[in-house]
Image 1 (tube, rainbow, N blue to C red):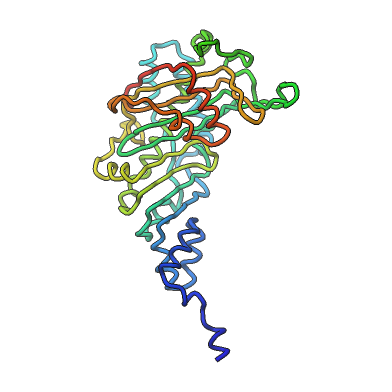
Image 2 (spheres, helix red, strand yellow):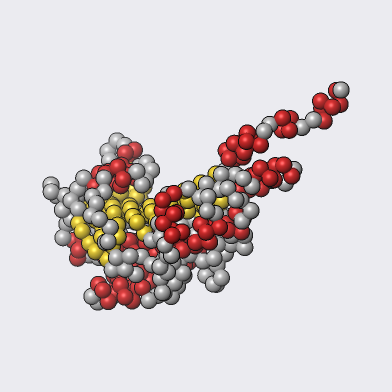
Length: 350
């Protein structure tokens, strides 16, 4: 009798539905994989998990250069094309978009698609890359969040030339990310009373640099979207999908309806690289030469960009929509910027 009690597995007393609830709390694909090899029953239940997180440990490129160098070379190429050349903006954009370099290389020897192939009931999936695609230099801060269906539906970008720390007593700068004066932007300048952008922003390359940031973020987002095709088709049960990176640089998200749209409408691939074609866009931009943040930090050259396709019905993005795209302290920065003057731009499909 005593031997029988000791040898009996307490998990045998738990119904499969309760086991599934436990496994859904684990999320991590590696932890679920370890559970799957415990027993045949565990293996059967684990593969029914509805909430899964896949963390990609490393990204292996098929080219000689690594991911970081690709990001750096991309930003350098963008800067040379859009800032260094004295050509018309449309001609510069054409040069940029004929670049053949891949933004996001093949994921790894064990891609998320291969790891997930036996999971048939996944409803909520998050994939986390080891780092952002863009190797940013000179202390540049960039955050973006994009939503896709079969194509881009919205994108919010928050960026700054540098993020600095201030002494709580006298306000003096005690730490500055690499450079407190990037591309000629004056760290001591402030917006005038009506929130307009200073003239120097247009003459010292500030606007062109923001175009670089915007295009590079859109290319990174559309490359991620393109990589998700097979995963979405292989998992018809998906209701939400997020593709982020450990650096917190960019996040791509798809809701249940957006996933339905993706399956119903074939995506338009870019002719120049392995990414989804970006449609013609309406862009709203806010800018502050210097922006104080809670906790004694500040952003230099703070920029907020809201992007929607041109063929969507005109929609004024709410402050909540723009600020909720980011976490502290960057949501405060977005909230401060959106209350300033708005500048409108347009961009052709690429």
